[in-house]
Length: 362
Ligand SMILES: *Cc1c(COP(=O)(O)O)cnc(C)c1O
Image (cartoon, rainbow, N blue to C red; front, top):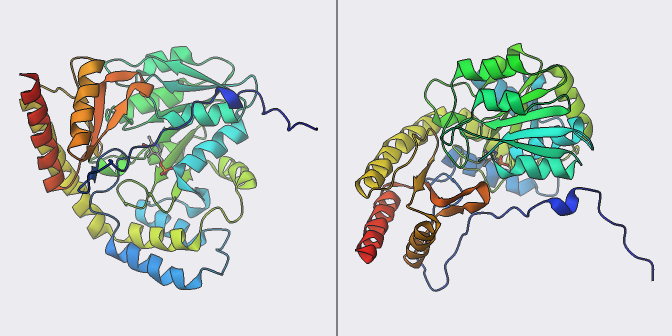
């Protein structure tokens, strides 16, 4: 019998992405704090737009995403011609790897960097190269030292997932300036909206042809289920990525909801300020339980336990109480748990559960 072909080199080296858990056997009142979703959901205006769009499910979406790109451009004062939309920013990351990195090329990311960088690099046949962080924070000198003449892309999430830490604008600029010709810095701004006075790398990407910014509607905007993200960079880079983008990569439901979401700045501001307030509550509660964390700029906190066993026991205890958080052993952080900032009752319940976990240890 004829056999199926073998996969391309690199494909079988990919570790399957494991998403945050979403249910617990026998527990009904579950709070999911494992995927950095918006605890308040999407803007009611985005929900209404999606419902309206649902009356036209038989119609193909437009292919140029012009209306959404115009709304994004107007919001952030960016040229819509230099924006590309994808099925989540994950798809933009995949396009970048597919277009710019292949066999023999290297893709650099940091020690506790987002899993999709290595997955997409390998899928494109390229080799992921991991560089050390310092105190769970990207280290510009270590990244520059990890770049070789084979490096085509350097990915940095700023703030980073799962650490929550970020580097400042001067460091980002130093990194972009320090890269050799033919190597692009990709600043993943999935959590940029949560940070005060931060443009996600937009100004740098406007100015420098070797800087690209990715953004998403999945986090602050609460549209993870619809899969909408975008990228912004040099015109030639956008033109390149558009050649491999499927013409109908976004649904018109996603397009309509995302456009309504980005225009609802009042809802965004409210979600952002609630996140800041509730994150402070969560961090203070963790501190009181002797669970240190780095300063988080995002909508989650990385709580550090004594060791991997203690983190696993805490995870199991929380799970038993219907609270799902994220183990991050696959990110090289076995002794930590990543906890999404919930709504007020969610934060209170998480802290009460961790308090009762400490009691079991006494
Ligand atoms: C969640 C996340 C993304 C992408 O999410 P999409 O839903 O694909 O837009 C990208 N980067 C980081 C660091 C993330 O945490």
